Length: 356
Image 1: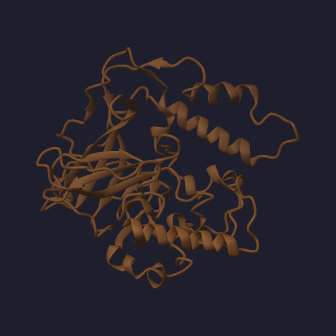
Image 2 (image 1 turned 180 degrees about the vertical axis):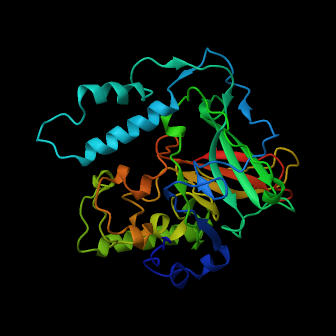
């Protein structure tokens, strides 16, 4: 089933014509739980990998001094929790049985004892994109496939998983690897994606407020304040962000959350700056500018960005963290996202990554 982003609450360029030349297209990936194959674009699915090419491992995590949780325990714990939330229970009754609690705790980084890894850590498949599914996919000449893998442990330089990108010509993979190696442990259950099929959709974005000219940003802020003052239903909504299971219709339009950068996993578009101001980034190999390639976000919408929820998912009324918005089960930092940037001069140069 395709996923369709609702029309924006209003035309931002009609109010602020200066935004028009700043528009960019982005491809929302809309990951949803499924059973992708190596010939599909996916998040957390199998990769079309040559059998004669070594599977990448993390050079920084290759000894038993590193501890984590078993991936199979993480997936089992997720299934147990989903089933527990779905079944009826008496008021005040425990969510889990004692036996289930043991398994869920074993799968949690904050739970019981962590186990040591066994040898080098194989990288985990995170994203696979075919140009046939995402025509806007950039890449070196002759390639039509992007594969993204990461180490499922935090790395000290940025407290993010170390990411590797691979560009391929899919037709060259005539003998694909049948069973890639799996890590015995992972450093964070937040870094293990559930297999998801993708439903690419092209949308238009405008820069986050942080990247707008100062005068334009100030006028947009004044316009937002004027809306709040004139909204007859305006009240103290300080706790609304915690109520993700009952996303109300948008009554007051917020530029950052409703009009600028689409939330969720996406290709291209504008950078979703949030807790920091934009800072210069350059290609580590040649010094050229970089541009957004891929945003990996664990949540496709939340209480602030509910206007981006696809129309096909509007019927869902269950728990937010068990619903379609959180199908990947990924989480970056404190519900932030991981952005990957590529060189504007050569997409096969080393990438740059950032968390916002």
